[in-house]
Image (cartoon, rainbow, N blue to C red; front, side, top):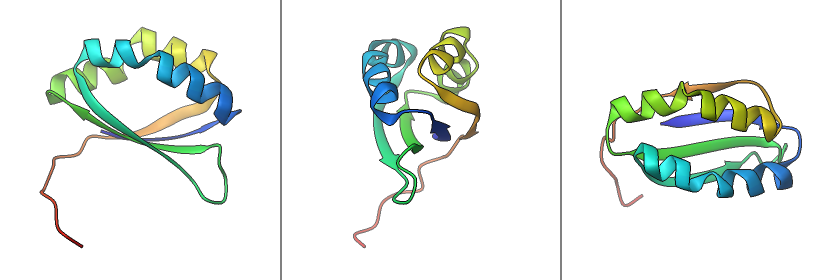
Length: 91
């Protein structure tokens, strides 16, 4: 799952994001990567791996996630894409 959103304060958001890790794991998330835009460090891109697509959809639509994003200062609605792994290359 690829998520892109803007936050009001990265440091505040990151503390809350890290604290919310148990909820992600319990929902089926098997790993994450966090990226920041080089020109706007409050623009966040997340790459999240899930045990299955249904769990990813359920988590993305959960009330808990909506409340957490609001509390952590996420601006607006995130852009979410569901991706299939097409393999890795060396370069």
